[in-house]
Image 1 (spheres, helix red, strand yellow):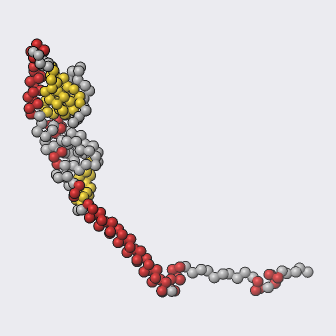
Image 2 (image 1 turned 90 degrees about the vertical axis):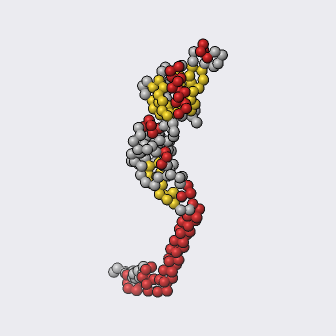
Length: 226
Protein backbone atom coordinates (compact mmCIF):
# COMPACT_ATOMS: atom_id res chain seq x y z
CA UNK A 1 0.00 0.00 0.00
CA UNK A 2 1.53 3.34 -1.08
CA UNK A 3 2.43 5.83 1.56
CA UNK A 4 1.50 9.47 0.93
CA UNK A 5 4.05 12.10 1.80
CA UNK A 6 3.23 14.55 4.53
CA UNK A 7 3.15 17.45 2.02
CA UNK A 8 0.59 15.69 -0.17
CA UNK A 9 -1.42 14.48 2.77
CA UNK A 10 -1.69 17.88 4.43
CA UNK A 11 -3.63 20.53 2.51
CA UNK A 12 -2.20 23.21 4.79
CA UNK A 13 1.29 22.46 3.45
CA UNK A 14 0.33 23.20 -0.14
CA UNK A 15 1.92 26.28 -1.79
CA UNK A 16 -0.13 29.38 -1.09
CA UNK A 17 0.11 32.15 -3.78
CA UNK A 18 1.70 35.37 -2.53
CA UNK A 19 -0.19 38.61 -2.94
CA UNK A 20 0.93 40.68 -5.95
CA UNK A 21 2.83 43.90 -5.24
CA UNK A 22 0.78 46.98 -6.00
CA UNK A 23 2.20 49.50 -8.44
CA UNK A 24 3.84 52.57 -6.94
CA UNK A 25 1.23 54.79 -8.58
CA UNK A 26 -1.57 52.83 -6.90
CA UNK A 27 0.19 53.00 -3.55
CA UNK A 28 0.62 56.78 -3.92
CA UNK A 29 -3.02 57.16 -4.89
CA UNK A 30 -4.08 55.25 -1.80
CA UNK A 31 -1.80 57.41 0.35
CA UNK A 32 -2.47 61.06 -0.58
CA UNK A 33 0.28 62.38 1.64
CA UNK A 34 2.95 60.47 -0.31
CA UNK A 35 1.41 61.54 -3.62
CA UNK A 36 1.49 65.24 -2.78
CA UNK A 37 4.97 64.98 -1.31
CA UNK A 38 6.25 63.47 -4.58
CA UNK A 39 4.45 66.15 -6.59
CA UNK A 40 6.02 68.92 -4.49
CA UNK A 41 9.50 67.41 -4.88
CA UNK A 42 9.06 67.08 -8.65
CA UNK A 43 7.82 70.68 -8.94
CA UNK A 44 10.76 71.91 -6.88
CA UNK A 45 13.26 70.07 -9.09
CA UNK A 46 11.61 71.45 -12.23
CA UNK A 47 11.69 74.96 -10.80
CA UNK A 48 15.37 74.66 -9.93
CA UNK A 49 16.20 73.43 -13.43
CA UNK A 50 14.30 76.26 -15.09
CA UNK A 51 15.89 78.81 -12.75
CA UNK A 52 19.36 77.48 -13.59
CA UNK A 53 18.72 77.69 -17.33
CA UNK A 54 17.32 81.21 -17.02
CA UNK A 55 20.30 82.20 -14.93
CA UNK A 56 22.68 80.92 -17.61
CA UNK A 57 20.77 82.80 -20.31
CA UNK A 58 20.81 86.00 -18.26
CA UNK A 59 24.51 85.58 -17.57
CA UNK A 60 25.21 85.16 -21.30
CA UNK A 61 23.06 88.20 -22.08
CA UNK A 62 24.92 90.23 -19.47
CA UNK A 63 28.29 89.09 -20.80
CA UNK A 64 27.61 89.60 -24.51
CA UNK A 65 24.71 92.03 -24.52
CA UNK A 66 21.99 92.17 -27.14
CA UNK A 67 22.22 89.96 -30.24
CA UNK A 68 21.22 90.67 -33.84
CA UNK A 69 20.84 88.75 -37.08
CA UNK A 70 24.13 88.76 -39.00
CA UNK A 71 25.09 87.29 -42.37
CA UNK A 72 28.14 85.05 -41.85
CA UNK A 73 30.28 83.43 -44.55
CA UNK A 74 30.15 79.62 -44.57
CA UNK A 75 33.15 79.27 -46.91
CA UNK A 76 36.13 81.39 -47.89
CA UNK A 77 35.05 83.92 -50.54
CA UNK A 78 37.74 85.29 -52.85
CA UNK A 79 37.54 88.58 -54.79
CA UNK A 80 35.58 88.12 -58.00
CA UNK A 81 33.55 85.22 -56.64
CA UNK A 82 29.76 85.36 -56.71
CA UNK A 83 27.96 84.55 -53.46
CA UNK A 84 25.99 81.37 -54.07
CA UNK A 85 23.39 79.39 -52.11
CA UNK A 86 24.83 78.22 -48.82
CA UNK A 87 27.96 80.39 -49.10
CA UNK A 88 26.64 82.60 -46.28
CA UNK A 89 24.00 82.04 -43.58
CA UNK A 90 22.21 84.31 -41.12
CA UNK A 91 23.16 83.79 -37.46
CA UNK A 92 22.42 85.55 -34.17
CA UNK A 93 25.57 87.25 -32.90
CA UNK A 94 26.25 89.66 -30.03
CA UNK A 95 25.93 93.25 -31.21
CA UNK A 96 29.29 94.07 -29.60
CA UNK A 97 30.99 91.55 -31.94
CA UNK A 98 29.24 92.57 -35.16
CA UNK A 99 31.33 94.91 -37.33
CA UNK A 100 29.83 98.08 -38.77
CA UNK A 101 28.13 97.54 -42.12
CA UNK A 102 27.47 93.83 -41.56
CA UNK A 103 24.54 92.55 -43.59
CA UNK A 104 21.47 91.14 -41.89
CA UNK A 105 20.00 89.27 -44.86
CA UNK A 106 20.98 87.10 -47.85
CA UNK A 107 23.51 88.30 -50.44
CA UNK A 108 23.17 85.61 -53.10
CA UNK A 109 24.21 86.76 -56.55
CA UNK A 110 26.42 89.59 -55.29
CA UNK A 111 30.08 89.72 -56.25
CA UNK A 112 32.89 89.70 -53.71
CA UNK A 113 35.25 92.68 -53.86
CA UNK A 114 37.55 91.83 -50.92
CA UNK A 115 38.41 88.49 -49.28
CA UNK A 116 35.89 87.17 -46.76
CA UNK A 117 36.96 84.20 -44.63
CA UNK A 118 34.61 81.48 -43.42
CA UNK A 119 33.08 82.53 -40.10
CA UNK A 120 33.44 86.25 -40.78
CA UNK A 121 30.50 88.60 -40.94
CA UNK A 122 29.73 89.70 -44.49
CA UNK A 123 30.27 93.47 -44.60
CA UNK A 124 28.71 95.58 -47.36
CA UNK A 125 32.01 97.24 -48.32
CA UNK A 126 33.50 93.82 -49.17
CA UNK A 127 30.85 93.26 -51.83
CA UNK A 128 31.03 94.93 -55.22
CA UNK A 129 28.33 97.28 -56.45
CA UNK A 130 25.85 95.67 -58.82
CA UNK A 131 26.86 95.57 -62.48
CA UNK A 132 30.63 95.27 -62.06
CA UNK A 133 32.62 92.62 -63.89
CA UNK A 134 34.64 90.09 -61.88
CA UNK A 135 37.87 91.96 -62.66
CA UNK A 136 36.47 95.32 -61.64
CA UNK A 137 34.99 93.83 -58.47
CA UNK A 138 38.38 92.41 -57.48
CA UNK A 139 40.16 95.78 -57.68
CA UNK A 140 41.18 97.38 -54.37
CA UNK A 141 39.15 100.39 -53.27
CA UNK A 142 40.15 103.34 -55.44
CA UNK A 143 42.45 101.12 -57.48
CA UNK A 144 43.03 100.76 -61.19
CA UNK A 145 43.41 97.64 -63.31
CA UNK A 146 46.25 97.41 -65.81
CA UNK A 147 47.31 94.49 -67.99
CA UNK A 148 50.96 93.48 -68.12
CA UNK A 149 52.03 91.07 -70.89
CA UNK A 150 53.21 87.75 -69.54
CA UNK A 151 56.25 86.02 -70.96
CA UNK A 152 58.77 83.32 -70.23
CA UNK A 153 60.02 85.13 -67.15
CA UNK A 154 56.59 85.57 -65.58
CA UNK A 155 55.99 83.31 -62.55
CA UNK A 156 52.90 81.11 -62.40
CA UNK A 157 50.36 83.51 -60.91
CA UNK A 158 46.78 83.29 -59.76
CA UNK A 159 44.14 85.78 -58.65
CA UNK A 160 44.95 87.14 -55.21
CA UNK A 161 48.73 86.82 -55.59
CA UNK A 162 50.78 89.92 -54.81
CA UNK A 163 53.63 91.10 -57.06
CA UNK A 164 56.11 93.90 -57.45
CA UNK A 165 56.37 95.46 -60.92
CA UNK A 166 59.94 96.14 -62.03
CA UNK A 167 61.10 97.97 -65.13
CA UNK A 168 64.52 97.66 -66.78
CA UNK A 169 65.82 100.38 -69.08
CA UNK A 170 68.77 100.29 -71.45
CA UNK A 171 71.86 101.04 -69.31
CA UNK A 172 73.04 103.53 -71.92
CA UNK A 173 69.93 105.67 -71.28
CA UNK A 174 70.20 105.80 -67.48
CA UNK A 175 73.88 106.68 -67.18
CA UNK A 176 75.21 105.76 -63.76
CA UNK A 177 71.78 104.99 -62.33
CA UNK A 178 70.33 101.58 -61.59
CA UNK A 179 68.75 100.25 -64.81
CA UNK A 180 66.14 98.18 -62.94
CA UNK A 181 63.79 99.62 -60.32
CA UNK A 182 60.19 99.14 -59.12
CA UNK A 183 57.31 101.13 -60.54
CA UNK A 184 54.66 99.44 -58.36
CA UNK A 185 54.88 97.44 -55.15
CA UNK A 186 52.35 95.06 -53.66
CA UNK A 187 50.13 94.98 -56.76
CA UNK A 188 47.30 92.44 -56.51
CA UNK A 189 46.72 89.97 -59.34
CA UNK A 190 43.03 90.22 -60.25
CA UNK A 191 43.06 88.21 -63.47
CA UNK A 192 45.32 85.86 -65.41
CA UNK A 193 44.98 85.37 -69.17
CA UNK A 194 46.99 83.50 -71.77
CA UNK A 195 48.99 86.56 -72.80
CA UNK A 196 48.65 89.05 -69.95
CA UNK A 197 48.19 89.44 -66.22
CA UNK A 198 45.78 92.09 -64.91
CA UNK A 199 47.01 93.90 -61.83
CA UNK A 200 45.23 96.09 -59.30
CA UNK A 201 47.37 99.17 -58.65
CA UNK A 202 46.90 102.73 -57.42
CA UNK A 203 46.12 105.54 -59.84
CA UNK A 204 49.68 106.89 -59.56
CA UNK A 205 51.21 103.42 -60.07
CA UNK A 206 49.04 102.86 -63.15
CA UNK A 207 50.72 105.82 -64.89
CA UNK A 208 54.20 104.58 -64.00
CA UNK A 209 53.48 101.03 -65.15
CA UNK A 210 51.99 102.31 -68.41
CA UNK A 211 55.16 104.33 -69.09
CA UNK A 212 57.37 101.38 -68.19
CA UNK A 213 55.52 99.15 -70.66
CA UNK A 214 56.31 101.52 -73.52
CA UNK A 215 59.85 102.54 -72.53
CA UNK A 216 61.46 99.48 -70.98
CA UNK A 217 61.13 95.81 -70.12
CA UNK A 218 58.64 95.02 -67.35
CA UNK A 219 59.08 92.07 -65.00
CA UNK A 220 56.65 90.76 -62.39
CA UNK A 221 58.18 89.50 -59.13
CA UNK A 222 56.04 87.38 -56.83
CA UNK A 223 56.07 88.51 -53.17
CA UNK A 224 54.82 86.88 -49.92
CA UNK A 225 51.96 89.37 -49.79
CA UNK A 226 51.08 92.35 -47.66
